[in-house]
Length: 169
Length: 169
DNA sequence: TATTGTTATACTCTATAACTATA
DNA sequence: TATAGTTATAGAGTATAACAATA
Image (cartoon, rainbow over all chains, first blue to last red; front, top):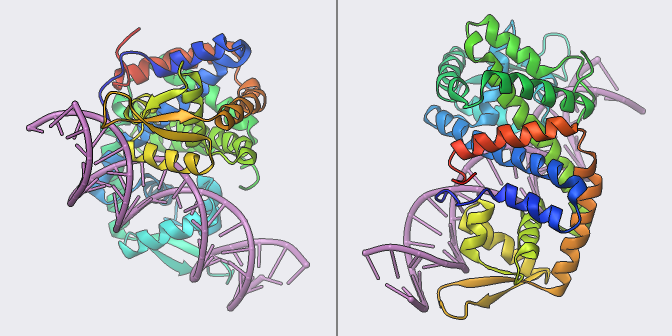
């Protein structure tokens, strides 16, 4: 979406913050802005890899989640909780995945209120292929060094825990 | 959007990756997924702070960018390049900011093709107030330690540079 | 009464393509 | 020809509110 800038716009913003009397928070502002921008770059890479499979990131995440569930099926509300997205987002994703015959809805055996999302054979195959593509084309060449990866996992893990994402160690 | 999970879903995903023969890329996958989730949390906080001002993050970014431009005005394409967003996204944001009387469009003095975005007095005031709110309510209590902030700035800066965001430093 | 899920609706941001106007 | 910006259109994700069915 444009050629490289001659200067780092986030570093410039940090200097602007310092110059305008916000020196205290200039660094965290820069770090947070960098996280936002990095997410954007990574999401674009991921969606680029998934596009040939007819998947978006949100739908892939649901497919991947199901593929790791022992039975290959999960209740809607469980998926919503694990993916940390709104229930209507899951309804939306399942609608589209169901149209593509990658998942199907089935009734819960004992609780009539809950709907199970089940992976079809086709869905399981596609999940495997998409995962292989993401692993080799994105995660396998992230550009982060091993030490930095460990550091990111720790720092962002602490952050997510403090933000109330989860409670365990 | 739900109470804390008993376990970290990203750590679980990392273990799943390892268990299914993707040990090589399990860690970068976890780091990247953590970046995605962290961005989501931060964006929600930022939008929460900006909402009372009638601003979204995209619109705030444009306002802040203008407020740091010496003349308080920038060409559309310059704003697009610096914010690293599509030109149509700038058109969209300017449309709404203009309706709110926070910016106005003015013709470029020498190049008839170019439109300048100019901050109104009202826009400048609102930008200042919104910045103060973000600084005190988000950046000033990010939850990241000072050392981690420095590390994030460096690691993500290297990443963005390698991704082609900018060429200097 | 509380929970599960769907529907309808609305609002983001983003992007492509076609178009006008200017350089 | 190339550039700047707009318009129209489309699609994505997300969210709120109202609702039906079930527990």
